[in-house]
Length: 468
Image 1: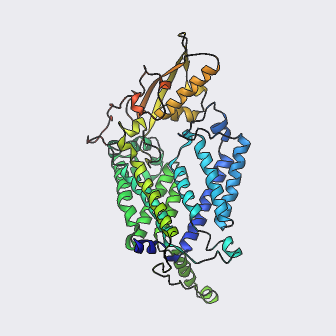
Image 2: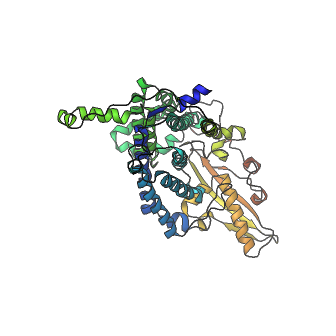
Image 3: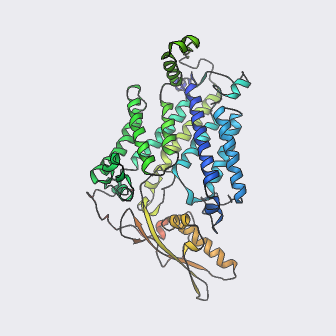
């Protein structure tokens, strides 16, 4: 145990961590500009009567449009501070709070790359990424150091590996192995207009993409840990992510993942690259001598204290949660792609395509009935997302009950008639029509009021066991 702790606290080159701080800050700045300036905040957060909340965060409410844009502006300034390493920890904490606030405003806006950004931001709040190549280090030499504890790389690198491996594991399911929903999406994309991507419109090409994605995550991700294979795997990952970025609109996710992968390379790789570039020019080499890479101590030689063990314990607890929490759907009944019980925060990316027709029926104690269409109270994105996600359906039913109760009606019940299509299947009924959705608690199993999915895929290659 002591040997492992000493290894985690040995000092290694900090240049790769400094470059990651700069690259991460640049990507965060891009998101702030993209969402703060070009996002229709009014469309997403103002032109709606209801925002869907995550369990435990119902207290998070949206500011007026001007307030939301101001938050994005402050976050953009924090991102710039992160890039240059100026008041780094304060900027990192403030950005994390602001980004998490926007994330928690509405479940309908959930994206896996938002969740990934939050995880890395939380970790970076505690990591001394401003010791090297930063304004903080220049202004205060006491903070400056060309080295950083090895655990900083282990923590960030393991977090990335967990995400990549989970992204591969979840694809070993009945629909993905039968090329859905990838076939469905690519049939509607214009990739056939580009001769380089024409094969993605054919079943054999879609099969290569589907099964290749599994292999890339489950085999390629571990190979990033080995010096002989990491550069080859990074090149394959780059091709994979560039294709995804071209075909799908998935934000900064591919760029963030690629940049984070460099944390698994040699800790002094930026110096190696810089030295190579400078050595290409004899004149430049003579004018600016190459900075030698310092020899780092192999072990932490000082006396271990309770603080060192506390850091290692907290790190292990964090990583254990990251490993096991995405697996929670295995403890739930039903198909997770259908009832969504355990879908979020599990790296289940691009695994389901859903379309639905939803109608809600509101009745009071005297027998009067009102028919509610989601599009009359929600914005288009919310209506589309909610109609096939049971947790959001339940929230919307509760909202309707509160609205009618506030108007003076009593003994309100809310039922739903929802036909949902999953991954090219014909529409099937999702919610039990005879159930008052407001009679259930949020933490009750959704299978108490939803129907199981029994409709087969219309075009299946084979029929193995239908894993979750």
